[in-house]
Length: 267
Length: 182
Image (cartoon, rainbow over all chains, first blue to last red):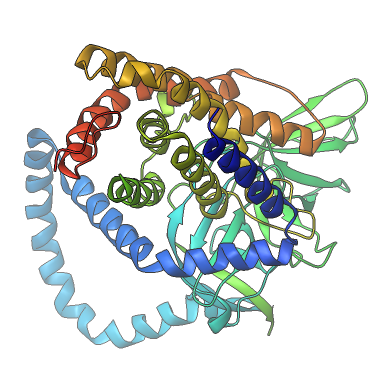
């Protein structure tokens, strides 16, 4: 073996060793800085992906289009009539829509954010949002959508943040099941992904009368996640020898969510 | 050679970012489409040993910083560890470098398919390390497919990339083992 190769191998081993033993804070800073650097690329990618999604949604088969055209002609006539009556109500509807807005109604202080990339290639379920320290986001803040709990912030840079999603095995959330006294910890499984999420609540009472469709809410224990946030609904319940295990269907569509809210506090 | 190495670094970074927007293949239990391993393994077979190690360190570090959440006071998969994971298939590819230097398309096709066959080592090694960190090891059909699936898809992706990268290397005046074209 050449001396240059030996030197390279030793250097490689030393550098890997140094990287691995670096303090966690330094690694988070490195991750944040890199994401900050590639932020323009991620933003461009996210907007292109949205455009492609729009085009795909617009492509329909010819027979579908014919049927839709007939239906729309009829609907158009009806709407023309209704439109003239509804003009006066437009302002009122806008006000009501605003009042119904999730952010306005929520009891939490929420920072809106847009998802700019999503990890589909590893054993971790995470995404990157386009808001960071400059917008008041910090690590361990809960992330919600209007449908329920999405995850929590793990790494923050100036204008981006990494969100660990509720489908990840390492994210554990204290939950209670609606209509029962049962409490447990919900987490994803290692095979879980954004597209095929698998959430489990283990160590439940095996005689608990848990039925499919029951809603699962956060308890607020631990301080990271506020209490009363919907996590999902029970898909099925299995009694094992020592414990009951509930499979949970997440309330948030993790593969298709585009906008989230970061909880920065209580109003 | 350095120019090709730099281009490869950029391509790998671009591929990491591009992979974010590729949906998983639901028919294969959500297996991912991976481009980076094929690019990296081409570099491992084409570049001399010291540069191959530098490429390994870069690819592993980028993988961990772009993909693995570095969360909490005790990070379960510290940044940099993937360099060791990438080194395993990288060394195998570098070991068959003499075949690459023969400059026959049949050998390049064989090496591309070999790189595809080595691709599942990466998700498998990550899975094993993660299982050790979490103190529990189990497997299911979904896990097996998510390990093997990227390799199956790379059987198509890798030859395409290999046959693009070889002319690109020559365009950048890099022909390993031969005198520079310029």
